[in-house]
Every structure is written in C-alpha cells, then in structure tokens.
Image (cartoon, rainbow, N blue to C red; front, side, top):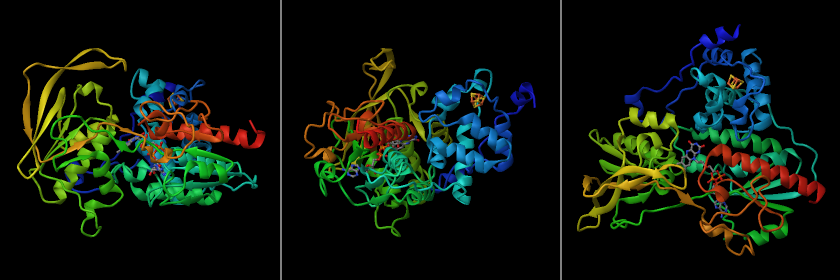
Length: 473
Ligand SMILES: Cc1cc2nc3c(=O)[nH]c(=O)nc-3n(C[C@H](O)[C@H](O)[C@H](O)COP(=O)(O)OP(=O)(O)OC[C@H]3O[C@@H](n4cnc5c(N)ncnc54)[C@H](O)[C@@H]3O)c2cc1C
Ligand code: SF4
C-alpha cells in the first residue's frame, strides 16, 4: 500500500454504548474496536523512521513496531512488543490522555486525524487478557528484598520491573484491594474493574510478587521499620487527600469531596445499594466543582445514580472558572459528559454555599469570570466580573479541585524531604529521595498527574533500584 493510500483510510471510530441507555447504567461506554477495524486502523500508520509518537509516550511504548505486527496479523508479537514497555496496556488504552501524548505527536495529525494509538493499545491489551499468550517469566532470585508502598500504577510498574529482574518484591497497600485510583477513583463505565484486577494479578502472579492489602504504612508499620527489613523501599502512595474551597457553607450536609463520592461508588459499589452495604446520598440537583478527569467522573456518576434512583428530571452541573478551551479533562471524557446531558457552567466560580435550618445544602452562589493575562502556569487567569453573582439551586455539591499526598505514610520517617505542598522531593530521573535506600514516584512526588506518568516514574525508579542493588551505587 502506498503512503497516499494509507492516508486516505479514515480513522476508525470507537463503537459506543447508546447515549440514552448508558446514562442509566455503569457498564463500559466505549466498546472496543472489532478486529477488522483494528487492522484497518493499523494500516494507516506510516511507520515513520523517527516516530514522534514514541517521543510523546511517557514510557516509550514501541508504537510503530507493535502496529506493524498487528497489521501483519501477528497479534502475539504485538503483545510481546507492547509489554516490553507497558505492563498495563488494557488500562492505558482506556484512560491515557492520548491526545496530549502519543496521538498528539503523530505525524498524521498534521494534515488530518492522528492514528488512534490508544484504541489499538486497548485492542492489544484486551486480546492478551482474553488469551494469556505472553506470561512474564520469573527469573533467577537475586536474594534482594524490596518493599513497594502503594499499589497504584506507580507501585505496580515499579514492582513488576523489579520482579522481572529477580528481586523479591512485597507491595503494601492500605485498602483492601490493589490498583490505587484505577480501582477506587476511575468509574466502572470507563475502566471495568475486572480489567484492572486481571491485568495486575496476571503480572504479579507470574513474577511471584506478594501484595499485602489492609497495611497502612505509617500506622501498621513505619517506613523506618520497612527500611530495617528490606534492601530498598519505593513509595508510590499517590495524592489521595482532597482539597476543599475555603468558602462559607462548606460544612453543610450534602457537600462532599469527589474522592469520597467516587470511592463509595467504585470501591464500595454504592450504586448497587442495598445489595452492597454502602449508601451514597445524592439529590436531584447536583453541582460538581472543577473540570478535570475527577470532575467528569463525578458528574457522570451523579447522572447515572440519579437515573438509577428514578430521578428522570435530575440535573448535574459542572462549574468551572475557566472556559471550554481550558478544560483539563481528557477530551473524550468531556465529550461523553456533554453527550450525557451534563450542564457546563464555564467562566463561573462558587463564592458561597447556602443551606436550610437543618444544615442541608439548598444552593450555591457563583460569580461570573473573564479570562485575563496568563498566570505562572501559562494559562489565562480567571478574573471575577463585578456584580455578576447568581445562585443555582442544588442539593448536592461535589468538590473535585485536586488533591495532595496523604501524610500518614510519612509518620516517623526520619529526614525525608518534602515540599510545602506535601509532595516528596525526589530526583526526576531516578526517583531517589533525601533518605538512603528510599525511592518515590507518581502522584506522591508530582501531585495529581496521569496513570502513564506515574507508571513511568515507577519504572525509572525500578531501574535505579536495580542498579543500586546489583552495583551498590
Ligand atoms: C477520579 C480520577 C480519575 C482519573 N482519571 C484519569 C485518566 O482518565 N487518565 C489518567 O491518565 N489519569 C487519571 N487520573 C489520575 C491517575 O489516576 C493518577 O495520576 C495515578 O493513579 C497516580 O498513580 P499513583 O500510583 O502515583 O497513585 P495512586 O493511584 O493514588 O495509588 C496510590 C496507592 O497507595 C495507597 N496508599 C496511600 N497511602 C498509603 C499508605 N500509607 N500505606 C499503604 N498504601 C497507601 C493508596 O490506597 C493507593 O492504592 C485520575 C484520577 C482520579 C482521582
Ligand atoms: S507518528 Fe503516527 S504515523 Fe508515524 S509511526 Fe507513529 S503512529 Fe505511525
């Protein structure tokens, strides 16, 4: 096929669950490319000599190589190539912000639509989950022991890479289930939990990695105690502590953090109450503050809960102080949220929450904003417009305004250096911290970021820990 012929093939669309039906259930929205569409999409790739797509991937997945194998019909080889760099392709194919990473760099995007790399990654990941053709082989034991704290993408990536080198790895996780945000944060309709469990369990079992759940480091055991028992320790505890706005009315009943709301729904299956014993209170008029992935997930869960509770005329607002062009969520999730009927109040910022005499939320007072000059982050700064206050009647307010690291892990930690924001100071390339034999990576270092950046940090730290264990430096 010539280059021109390849460029004429249209980007293959992802089949989706019907918009109206999916508003009433928690089943996956994106259904996955069928085989013929996946191969057709793979045909579009130009197999660039200097593939910019790979430069855009935080873990450097060998993109042209796995696509070549896929279109030649050798899917087992595609899986093998994929797994050299990425042990969780079914997860990453579903949740990575591809438009800012691999696909954002794809050469096809200069004149038309970029290659749907994420959709192909998911296709490969799902194929592997259903067939199990590429087990990881446990190598000879090095006799070295490593403790990994936290079982999110950073911890899992670090543990798996160390396991592949033959070190004995134990993961300590405070919750009763491994996976971090993949399990307790991202909803089922975006990332089905069997996919996460299956992808993690397979990698971990093949390599003999032990996962100790219900272990809170800083309470059950301290970091110092771990350092006494293990040759190296990696901290990948994420950033699970929610931020709240400092506005009047924040303590009314009906105001909650997105963290609490999503954990109840995803980890505790509140949407299947009373079958599962965790209720979540939600009214017919909900306001979600913020417009990142967490806000989109909260709003879309709220719509589904309202439907499942029979609130046909329910309303969910997303209140965001910047404009639609600055929405930080993944593009796909933003579009899906719009399709599902969520109302976006852009250039709007809450100033006060109102409640009734019983302490229940009744409304939220907001002010209109305009965008001014760029701030330190390079984004245009939102500035309030005088005398533009107005009120939206709501009974539930969900705060999705970012998170910081939970400090419990740092109890009795000696002289581990941290920033004023509470994140760990660690070398970007190696993950080394101010304490000997202690590495860190993922959201606990960067603050809330992405799955693949956390995995990248876990992998870089694993490489450095391995060097340290084998060469003592
Ligand atoms: C709702 C939501 C939606 C998101 N959507 C996306 C998305 O679509 N795409 C994307 O790329 N990113 C998304 N993100 C961000 C992404 O999930 C995170 O950047 C990523 O999970 C960070 O990985 P991590 O391993 O550093 O931390 P986490 O995933 O937070 O995992 C940390 C783990 O450490 C455990 N832990 C914490 N303290 C202790 C302790 N003291 N002892 C033992 N264990 C402990 C926690 O229970 C947790 O399991 C989303 C985040 C949220 C909250
Ligand atoms: S940049 Fe795009 S076209 Fe080029 S190799 Fe990567 S995916 Fe293929």
